[in-house]
Amino acid sequence: MSEYKIPEEYYFRIHHVRPRFKGDIENVLIFVAEEISRIGKLPRDQFVEAVDNAIYKYPGNAHREIKTINNWRTEISALFGFIEHDDDNDKPGKRALELAEHQDLVQFFKIFLYNFQYPGAHIKPSSVIEQINAGIHFKPAQYILKVLRYANKNGGNAIGITKFEACHCIFNDLRVTRDNEGVEKTWERISKNRKNRYTYDQTGDVIRYAGDIIDYMEIANLLKTYDGRTYYLNTLEEETIIKFCESNEWFDGYDTMIKNRYADIDSVKKCTNPWFTYVNRNMDNTDFSTDILAFIAADEDELNTLKSATEHTVNAKLTDFINREDEFSRRIASYQDEFTTKDIGDIGEGLVHGHECMRVKLGGREDLIHLIKRIPTQFAVGYDIGSVELDGRKRFIEVKTTISSKPLHFNKVHLTSNEWNTASSTHDRYFIYRLMISKNERKLFLLQDPVGLYKQDKIEMVPQDGADITFDPNKVGTFEELLTWKN
Image: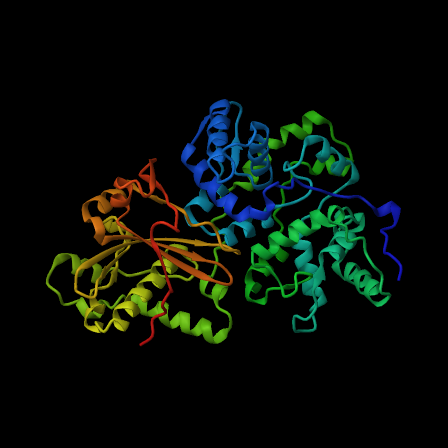
């Protein structure tokens, strides 16, 4: 067997920043997004110092050299656009603010890939110039999806692509990245190579940039793999895949330079701030939020079960207490819940509501289920769900939900001032339910009486627009199986 080589006249290796924390990227990004979001807008030197101090707090970073911390900051800023700049100040980018608020890493990576292109200010200006001079004009995720849709055009989804095929037949070939070759020709080349049993250089350093993008596409739920080698379209994301393939969105700041095949350093640098403005633009009209039930369901049967459970929580047993006399219950009963499986807060609260109803039912107190209810956000009572113990005492539950491709660390949560004050006044009746949703597992961790634990020095708390709570799950709190409501 012979090794496939890109014809020399078409070879150009594109690249991007590779975070040195790539193996832990989801944990790092959600941590840094939360920290940056709290910093706000500051003069550049002050902002840099504040971000560095935050990165030092990430587990394992306390004794790292400042050079390493600076590298983390610049890599996160450059590749993921977490920071926006003007002449004198820096501020949290919209993408960082969204991730901190929604805790949806799958959505985050969809948006990142939707915007990601070559050239872009995610690399040094000198590297941008090299790509401009080569005529590069390429959106990698979009092209990969188009290739796979073409390969599977006759139905089914049995045809995938490997990282080394993507590297040598797409990423490093100017016929694709410069000339925007039709996907049918690219797929014909890949198919011919398979038929002729050509091999590829699979060295990690060679294929790492194509590999990164494919890894990010898997995190974004656009691709799936069964063996870690071949990647297939995730047909459950068909709507999103079509949006990618049909998109004409493109950062055009370099276009004149690309057309002329010439760029000078000053012109490229002038595009830096507009690039970060572009990747942080308002994208409210492009909904990439995760359909969480479809994301976590193993098959159609489980999806139907989950939908049934969440439909139960939408109504929140309102009919059981709609006739009660107190004003609060009437306000709850009149509340029209706009539940959606694409709202991570709603789905987390919905799953926990179902869990609580099932917990009480299994405890033999089905007569108490009508007391378990979700509290509309606008009531600002400091908790999400009013629940009950088997002996009838009240339980106040604040739900913190995160969705990711892989399981995340879960030893830190943020409570607002209102939530912390409510926890202070309700003592051991107050619970934090930390719900971690990933592709292959759902973890539910309960932390009871956070204020009491803090006063006993069993958890750490830092006042910051409320309270940042850090805890050791091996010393405080308990794991519980997430129960699914069944009539």
